[in-house]
Image 1 (cartoon, rainbow, N blue to C red):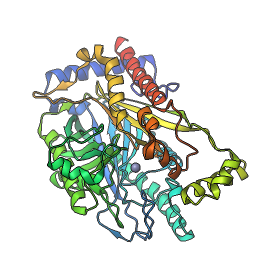
Image 2 (tube, protein in one colour):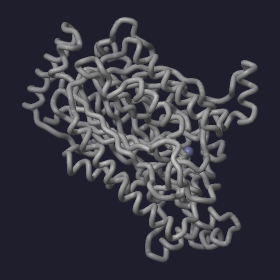
Image 3 (cartoon, rainbow, N blue to C red):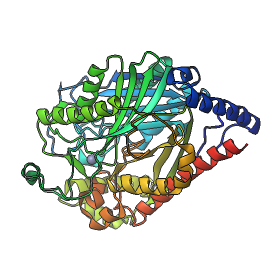
Length: 503
Ligand SMILES: [Zn+2]
């Protein structure tokens, strides 16, 4: 029964008569949620299961995220985790979210993980989201940022072996979460935490003094803390999914550590025994936690984030009807130019080892008959939970502008329907957008600048592309193409949902 489950635009599930049955079930559920208290809806409502597996390296490995490291890490400050949640709606349709304490995973690994989940659990691609916290105290995995490191044969073999193992661990986490599925109430809310600073618009060393003097910091930020909770029938929490738009770069030392998202998650799990807390990174590619560089600060930011989540949990939250839709599609995002063989040969002689390393990779490909790609298959998806919550998942390191432009684009288009489709909002409901944007999702192939940041250039707009081994900055239509696809997907989900209601 997959009528509420929408595919990639060309792929759809189900048939008209099933749709009518689901419509009836859906109407019953809506009536119940209006008339009865939450407990009574549980038997026909959401189910969810959560699980986590340690992915802390067990042998010395190179750390990801910074080019300046000179030796592998051997010690752990905290465990690194792969966490999984399996959500099941009133019709038995399942979705999987996986969060990882890693800088990023590449497309090949993402595809392999999703293929395994699909074949083992019969969950289609659009219902799977993989998300990394982007901690810079995690290991090098797969080919992500491979231009940044000069790994010897031992390290290369450890990365390969860790990467294979990681996929097994993720599979175990998902299987365990699927086995733990139990009746829950899902609810959401938005909190706030203020430690993210726009790193392009502020000088790092000046931030503490400006804050102390009450001087406003420059540049756009998004301090929202979106929170989704799964509560058991006895009222206890079994899962807390929460996000924040800020680089996990408080720390840059030689120990494995989940950075502030890891500390926030462990704080929440200790406060709510029996729960799994899952962090997802928002559009924080141009945001840093400032000041930084000490474990105490990472713990402090973790505490601030956990407190923001607790404040949301303590208030009445917005209960989600047990309805779920998903869509996923990859668009071909163009690079502004592709270097010629001659340009690669020139770069290979550069004193800049990163430029030379990228050129070496391109030349090896060209020699093997593989041309340098002019585009990248960029992953975009949306989950629609309940009647209005939309979680947009974007690949790569997405800058903060997208959280606002996507929220505005989707909210503007659905404003007329909003009043008739309002969720079951408890007394004293909080304000906040019901469009969440998750960055660093599915695969992390590059920075994703807005047109503003692309035009400004700098690290996020241009130069970081070298570390990611991409041929050049993105073409000028990068933001427009992404926004157009997000709006198309959102409209598609809404049209399918309203078609079902009309039948
Ligand atoms: Zn980054």
